[in-house]
Every structure is written in C-alpha cells, then in structure tokens.
Image 1 (cartoon, rainbow, N blue to C red):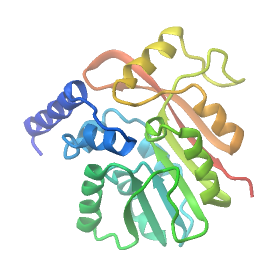
Image 2: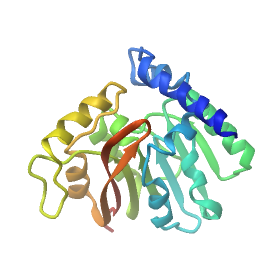
Image 3: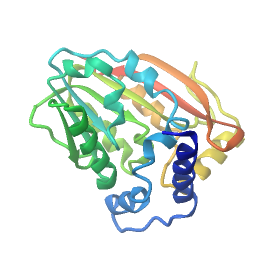
Image 4: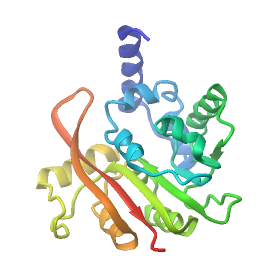
Length: 247
C-alpha cells in the first residue's frame, strides 16, 4: 500500500472516530455503529495507537495442543502476532460482539488458511467454548471497551484451567494512591485520558489493574506510555500484564 493510500485510509478512520455518532440500545449495536464505517482501515490506523501488542504475544507461552481464547478480538490481527506458533494451538477462538470487525476477521482466517482458528460473535462475559477449560485468555485493548469489565475478568477466570495463563495489554490510569511499586499518574493524566477516550466508549479505569492483580498471580507487568497518532506531545499510559490462575 502506498503512503498516500495509507494516509487516506487513516484520515477516513480518524473522521469516523471524531465525527460519527454512536447509536444503539445495546452494546453490540453501539459497537456495530461505531466500527461499521472504519472496519476496513481498523488495523492500519491502530498500529500506531495500540502499543505493546507485539511485546505481549512475543512474551506469552504457547501450550502445545492448547486452547486460546481472545476476548474482544476485533479483526483477528492478534492471531498474526503469534507467527508460526499459532499452528501449535489445537483451537483458537477469536471472540467479538462487533460483526463488521468479525467480517474482516473471518476473511483473514480464510485468506491465511487457519484451520484451527474460529471467529465467534459473542459476549466476552458469556462465551462458552466446547472445551470445558482453556489454556490461555487474552484481552488486547478490549477490557476498557467491555461495560461489565469485572464480569469479563471473572469469566476469564472461569474459562481458564488451573495454571492457565492470562495476557492483557490496554490503556489505563492509576489510582490517586496506587499500590506499592505501581506507577503513579498525574492529576492531569487521571482526569484527561478517561474523558478523552470516553467519547468513543473506551473507559479507562483505575480499578482494572488492582482487580486483576488481586485475582491472578502476576508473572510480569510492564507499565509504560505511548504516543497517539496526530496528537503530538501527549502520551497515554498502558500496561502489559501476564498472569496465571493459581494451580
């Protein structure tokens, strides 16, 4: 794709982000309304927005013949990040409520010939795979978009086998008084970023990370800040968490 085509695609996506109304009575309807006009350019625009995804998937182990569930999978680009290791999974479920994004995901699966990967239109708080337990659950910039985020975390716990792994990368803000050894964000960050993202129904919550660390055993945690496309001099906090359900 030429630089001009990339820029045009990005500006079209940016237009939808800034101007398009979000309509609908249910969460699924609102997702379809928001992403319907930008699904085709979704991946390209977010390469410079969603930091840490490659690092997360490069760091996660793959259980041979294991089962992976990606909750809030969108277009399924996360599956690309495994590279050849994706074939080691017995089954991978890419779960999302937004059908326009899943249409892109299904086309990606067909184009790549991934016989062990399935796109599923379902709620992250209710999805039930045929397997009774899974080996890995991931949330990649999706936990902040799930209204019942605490139930999504609890459901991930229920899905995982004892000793199963949880991988998350997402935006966040700290509490005013964070836990010991955790990052502390300024008053501006703690108030500006939740307001900024809420217009797109992305809700940065200071309780996400403490709740996750309370429920799961932490293996690694990185707290960082990343730039935003077309927003110079501003960096938004994000974290990369790898944790485990106690076995």
